[in-house]
Image (cartoon, rainbow, N blue to C red; front, side, top):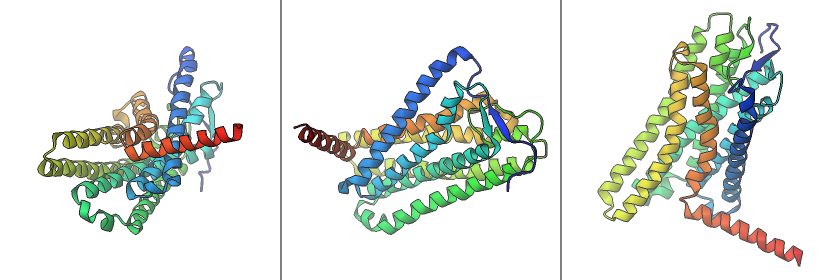
Length: 316
């Protein structure tokens, strides 16, 4: 149930109020959005269509690509619209819906990255038991579990926020609807909401983060103890480093935003952090997880070659 106050809409003030910058920012974020959707869409297409990639690692990679397409779509289209909009309004229902899907997809991605790190840990540290441990049933259950936890985590925040009474200014100093800026507009006690944000969201961020760190740390220790080839070790460490960079870009801004006190960080800092974990990571994930992967590159090349061949046949 939504609250019964007279609030019908909020105003999203966006990333800047400098009019001269907005056309340039529109081009930048539109390019990022297109790269994100096309890149993740290509990964999702090849993972689904190529039987050689019907393996646990690529099953989770397909989930990640689907998440990133949806995650960036929750915030970026509205941001792009508001660069040329005069009123920048979003309805109350639209705001709560955006908040829900943002936390649903964001928390699911945070947990999915930990699952992917665990998958790599089993593949590298327990290679003989990999197919037994990471069987189809376990992979499906893990994926369903993280999506389900993410949904109910978001439902908690959207329901708690929708029952707040809002008064005074309805201007949100952000480019999308999130819990923290909405709590700033509430005209009642929000200590419970803030505690839930810090505790529940903090746990969902910190728990997978430490599990991811543990998985990569175990992988590195295992490689140093078992691998005597410098080239193999260097390649493995390089791959881990690139994956770990994505993990840092996602988890650190999230922890900074949702665990720090509401009054302890400015909205400008929160917006910069939000751009990192909503925009940048969604664009980088397909590059980081595929450019170093021979199987995915081969599958993509095969698809493009097949389409070019079919195109030539149709022309003749």
